[in-house]
Length: 137
Length: 137
Image (cartoon, rainbow over all chains, first blue to last red; front, top):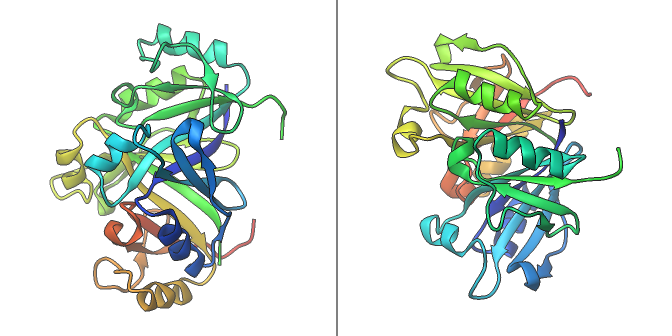
């Protein structure tokens, strides 16, 4: 049902500083993108097998604001799995007693695809995103 | 210099329970391995592009003991990058002012390859492992 890890997100206090640190290690880092409707600025660390997403809070109501208050230096924020049929996954999650965050309905995520998030307490402390990715790779 | 993410480790309080939860989501999970010399039991979640390593403390002096005291429900523990020449990376890390944990020398990690760890405070709250993987994939 789940074939690929789509990305891992790392929340950072300063996107430029973090990007510079990774570039110094020889990692390719994309230019920052502002996603005001999602309350974040992001850059991607590009690896052959997946992307790490550096995420910085944008605006006063950023969804990572609380995480940054608890972890001012940054930290691993969430894992995102690619799935083919998000509705099937959502049903399995609910049947397993896992809590889907928000209204429980899918919404459009930062990459334009439908996503849901599962409460970290229901997956061993890991905030987990499931993203519907239609095309096979 | 860094081409691939080798694995992401998730520390969990109960390896069997965590494995069962991921299996229910359709993830392939390997049988548990005891690594007493590293103070952990591990299982791998197998994805097409990388492995997630579930890690449970083993014995009284487990290196993840402190993390589990702080995060009794579990949590993302570290990221591991594959590198070709660990010595070169270690030099770059030191020149960038990042602290290599322990003696600073490479040691043999849980997968039989030379590894070093960088202090999480020097990479935005993320404990980061660098593993020398000789063969190209």
